[in-house]
Length: 466
Image (cartoon, rainbow, N blue to C red; front, side, top):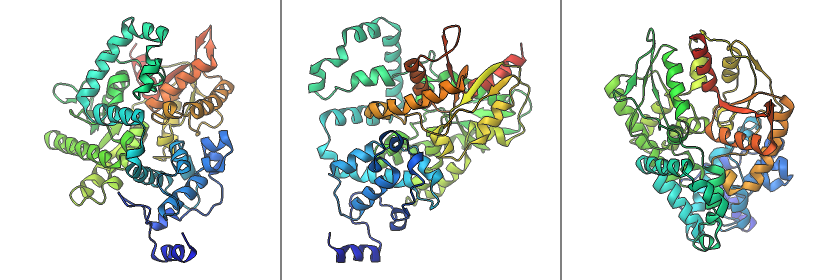
């Protein structure tokens, strides 16, 4: 692009690179002042030392694409966008208020639309299975979960891993070469039973009712972390809440939006908003919509932004997002029931990126942990840095993910906890993998535990009843 045309773009504030979908504003795209404060906050820059693996470098590439100086076919652009964890730590460090996560999402969506015909067969098959068949259709996901549980509890999993069936060259030839990594790294133990909404649709407060809240039970949380959802309901009912659990919820849409399928993510958002609106008509107004998965919570809080251009949904989406509260955020905002039993345990807390950087929630989880008698909270170095999970990043970018995870495990080892406390399912799986990789023990040959913060609160309440 010649200098005259570039000057015209700046003057007119146009971004001609965006031709297929929603475009960011020119001011948002050009807000970076190149100060470099984001560099050491970025996990991929920290492990590679590569400027193009930093927020500043990626912003340069995104702006070049937006202004039409490089195309969506650029291998450099695609590579460095795909290797971003979207942890948004750079946003917390940025003095200029660059909306980095928003820019990455919009650019990734545009690039995906422009290059959809260039995707490999493997990528097309996996994206179709994951995004369009599993995480967009709750019934399919539950059928998959039940089949997976049978696979895990029978001898089939052991036989497959011993034989290496999913690593056969024939599968790679038809585009399924990533299945072995998905099965070994990403497939969590499936809960038995799965989490189900109560028949009557709600659970009453144990004592006096002061609040009516709705629980966003989630897709992965319901099939792989059912015990956390159950603990969440118990903790809320002990804190004066009637808990409504809506049926027919969809995936929050985070996987779709973060992986370039923004339009389908909007469909997920609209369906979920409609489900909660129907629940409010049936049970009455909610004081809060509770979420116990940080990544999902960040997405739900962004429905207002996601649907702001939709005339029929903008106001409804904004109203929905205004009610979304992380479970720790909500409990820290009310008069907490402090009838805890004593738990003697040394713990450290790993900040979930989409709780700390995405929702700006840092002190509530720590204040809740400190409220439990006997808990010794030890801060580890760089607890605010990503663990390398980032949705399906530890499969799509496994080498970088493991480098980031190994650095995290060094910090865990220095803190010497008996248990690592998290607030997000992806972090929980990743930290368990890290403990296993590093061989970290809490004593007597037992590995360090990894638990969701709500599990510890639930345990403390139950301990008071013994």
